[in-house]
Structures are given as structure tokens and as C-alpha cells.
Image (cartoon, rainbow, N blue to C red; front, side, top):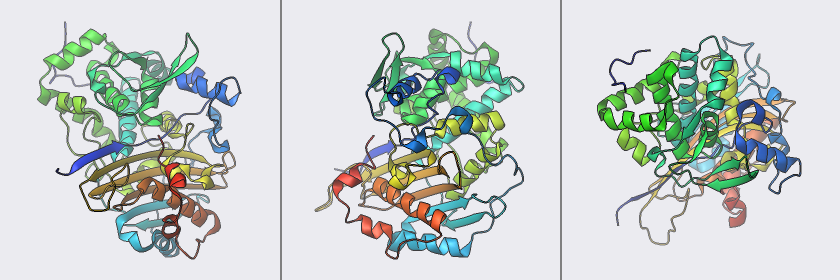
Length: 444
């Protein structure tokens, strides 16, 4: 580990949103990972606490959430299937030029099907970039403990992190389990809040907390810098970031997030998370641009399923972090997926300006309305008759993009499972759905 470059210690357009949710980790993972909210969710399912129960597709146990393509290490994405691609474009309808999609059907791995529409389009994917943060965490852990999986798990489970001003600011709330009072608290992360490394990773994925994501990046930078001396005291953390020049912190940020991409066989020119997720974090450690393409996001998911993101342990744990075990939203909220296991991440970025007869609201921008979703779908959950990967990006102005992604999820699932779609496109019919139905796709 090279630490030589860092010191050591003795009415204009308005940007309105950058967010995403995933809702993750198997409910019986509390003993293994120590993620507190899982214990609350388990008790809700057992009828011991009040709360919303999960759809049947969210109830797989730890052992059932596994990587599925390890026996195909040399598998690569095939050429697009013209029939499947044609049906996909038909599904997208008259706004097809505003969507970018890649689908890989692995239901029969020896006879895969690939459909692609504008697969090389590159754009900011918002919170989907948190998948690259997870990759950086597990790559850094593997570099530190290459032959000791329990040491990696112990570091994630037993390291207690105290949130500092890197969490400022973020509107997302997280679920914190009060172990003494045995109650679940939902709040925005604030300086002084505590959790394990695993819990901050889960909050980054399950609630898509930008505060948690910036804290995870902060402590992965510290893990890379201090190595086996990590974890370090909060006072030392503050001293390190206060005393280290911004240029050096920017270099450490880049060396934390970017090499794992290329080391795991992806092109940094096509997929990159370049910065922290909060304004305060970005001021402390300056970064660069972030982006991805549908094709590279699909490659990430394929490598995960092959156990090739760092190693099998890391791939499996990232997949568990993606497993939807809280309220499903956006793409994952499609009723057609209720019985499926969904491994999911989404992100959005929307922007509005005044326009006659236009009302700006979340995921409904008229200047920018980016919505991005990635998903691994196994249906039915536990049986896996169908197994497919999806990367979906869109920028359709003046529409509820979260509801559109929910609608597309239903159409794509039908396309994979039946080989066909309705005569009239689902997206066109979705315009007539009541507002209440659309709201179900966007609630956070």
C-alpha cells in the first residue's frame, strides 16, 4: 500500500434532485453482518412488531442469495438478438429515443439472449454509482486481507463509525435499530450518529442515503491510507482531513474509487464514480465527473454473477447488499415482480425551470429528468426459472420517470417470461393511470 503522498499523524434553472433507493440485504443477515434494521424487519415478518411486510420475493435467506454464473467464468455478452431487441424498442414506444436499455436473459445460460437499445450512451447515473463505491470497499478489504475472509467480515461488522460533517447534507432517512430499547428509529443521518461499517454500507444501498455513501467513501479512503491501523479514533479522522491538502485528498479519493474499476476489467472511460455524494464531502475531497453506460452497468452485474468482482466473497456480499428487502420503489415496485427476487439500485437527477401550465415535482423535470435503474431478477424467487439482468437509463421530460420505470419493468418481465408484449405499449397506456397508482412507484 502506497501512502507516501499523504501526511500521517502522531429564477434560473434549479437543480431539484439527486437520489435513489435500493432496499437491501437478506432479512436473516443480522447475526452475520450485524445490520440492525434487519432484526426489526425479521420481527415484523414474525409478527412481533408492527410494520409493512415484504412481498414473497423479498424473503430469501442468506444461503439462497448467491451468485449464479460462477460455472461460466468465460461467458461474455453475446451479440444483440434482433427479435428481442425489436420487441424491446416496440415496448419503449414513441419516446424510444429518450431511453437507453440493455437486457441480458440468462434463464438458459447456454442459450443467452441479449437486447440493446442505445447501449453505449454515457450519462450521470446518480445513485447507481454507489455500486462502484461498494466495489471500492470490497477491493480495498481484499487488498488488506487477501486470504482472510473472516477478517474482512469482522472489520465490516465490528468497526464502529461515528458520522461527522461528511453527512451534510442529505434528505434521505435511514432505519436505525436501537438495540437497548429494541425500537426502530427512522431519521436523517447527522453528525454523531453511529453505526457499523456494514450498517453504513446497508444505509447507502437500502435507503440510498447520500450521507451514508459519503461516510463509506470517507472511511474507505481512511482504510486505504491507514491500512491495518484502521479503524482510527474520530479525533484522528478529523485531524487527518483538516491537515491534509485538498489536492492530496482528491488524489486519495481517485485512488480509492477508480483503480477497482479497471482492476475488475471495466473501462474507466465508460463507467466511473468520481466524487462523494454530499456537498460537504465534495468540498473536503474534490472529485471529478461520474457516468456509466447501460452496457457497462450490465457488465458490472454479469461480473458480479460470475463472482469476478474482486472475488466470490465480494461479489456475493455486493449482491446481498442489492437484495430488495424493504419497500420496493421505481423499477422494483412493479407488481409483476412481487414474487421475484430483485437485486436493485436506482438513481435520479431532475431539474426544472418555470414553464406555463407545468408543475414541477420529484422525478418530473422539464429541463432534465434522468432516471436510472439496474436490476437482477430471479423469478420465481428460490426457483429461478427466469434469470435476467437489466440496465435502464432515461431522460423523458415532463413525465413521472419513476412510474415509467415501474411500467417498463412489467413490460420487460412479460417480454422475458412470455416472449411477447401487449399490442399497445405499456408506456402509452400508463399516461391514463390514476395519480395514486403512480405515487406508489415513487414513495420513499
